[in-house]
Amino acid sequence: MLELGLNKSLTRLSLVNGSISHYQLIRSKRKTLSLQINNDTSVIVRSPQYLSIEKIEIFIQKKSIWIERKIQELQKRSVTKPTYLNGDKFLYLGNYYPLIRQKIPRNKLKFNGCNFKLSNDNNGADEFYHWYKTAFKAIALPRLDYYSNMCQLKYKKVRVKSQKTIWGSCSNTNNINLNYLLICAPISVIDYVIVHELSHIKHKNHSKAFWDLLKSILPNYKIEKKWLKDNGQKLQNL
Ligand SMILES: [Zn+2]
Image (cartoon, rainbow, N blue to C red):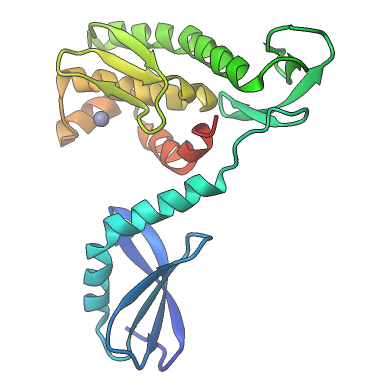
């Protein structure tokens, strides 16, 4: 492998928890390896001049959980909380729509397909919480029943929850929980989480058999899985 010499840096690819992530390698007259994560989530590895790439990669692998966690923290920080002011944009089924504040007193949050409208004297946070939760139940629950019947994967109870970090879960007794914040995601992503949890009725793990079952129902599930990984933070800032 061709590498540049003293104090020159190289952008390399490394496998971090199964996903490819970039890092910049800077070699210099130092004795130890070090890792730096910048605010823009870029990763810099500083290494002794002649240390082999294999040893550097092993070092990164060992730190991969820490790197992932740090990057997630930074991404979380970079997502700003909504202000609920006129013009603020809100996600619904994968698209952003502006909020228009109105002078009409005490009217509820309304959505007309182009924008959200809300009275000036209403608290935006509570209104959006209720609106999102109601909309999620109306859209997701019939889809859960549709896939459950179609695939003969019978769940016991379903609960729609407000969780910051979990999109869905399936208990040992086949009770399903779904996160209402998924209403911000495209409908195909909602379907992915629904079918993922239904597949756990048959396989209580993430084995090959589990993914094969999921794939037999949603052949392109990897696109939705990736969407959730890449955009999940945007959904969690209410
Ligand atoms: Zn799972």
